[in-house]
Image (cartoon, rainbow, N blue to C red; front, top):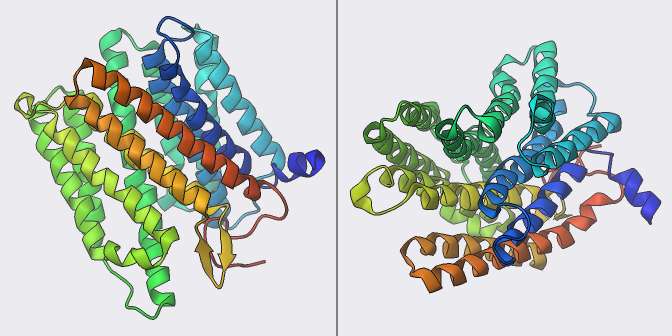
Length: 387
């Protein structure tokens, strides 16, 4: 059994990297359940490791799995996957050891730098230039991580921490939106329904609005960033209307993705409202709707597809995964309610949110064990089969 697991683990990059993403998601919030002053600095550890640890592993697993489809070249070799896992582990250790020097900073960000370089080199070699922005995204994440760890002053480091969730929102727009639209069209066509369509400018306008909002925040123009964030959120919600998301209830595997996407427009609107002091909403709470909500649930919904059973051309959502998705969403709601809770209720909601999140991801890990053994179904995240 152990030999089968260790061999099968390296057959596809999503196996070890999705496993690490789920494991880190389940472990990191435990810092909120121990008494203050024991162990690591809870806010810093929580913020950094869920973004760059959990998020980095999930992004790497997805992009390396998609790479052969981009380039038409052979799949990622097991040795390459092992190197990426080693770099990810080295990054976690480098951050845990405290404020790094130059060597430690390189070690902490090497995973993103190597991942972005590998993806960019292979995309350029295959001439698929339209994929280059996605291939370069890990390099940007690595730069933001470096600023967050050792930025020139607390202002730069704090700004990097705020930019990181919006960068993941940007990735969701680029990757998640395209994947969700494709899955929705395929399901509609296979069900005998007219596939939903959306004008190309809509996704582009939402993406542009988010980019401009991020630029406005970098220039310390919250009065401009707020409307841009709200506008981008409304455009993302409009995409759901054109996708006819309400019909996804007939296909649970697709419904999880649509429900996860709903957190993105909500998070962007909340982030926009937080730029107005009169709204009474802090940016930290709004960003949790993006990180825990959009980023966390979308990763759970996509990574869970790798372990779903394939039945009659459809993916079947297991009970553990459905319960995991419900617990994670409940954890997000409790975290958002903390913004208007008193001191006692605030602490209770924090602990309940952390416990619900950890329980949800633990259930995911239990369900994902089935994806670690045996041959890898291709394509990994779709119900269709091919040799």
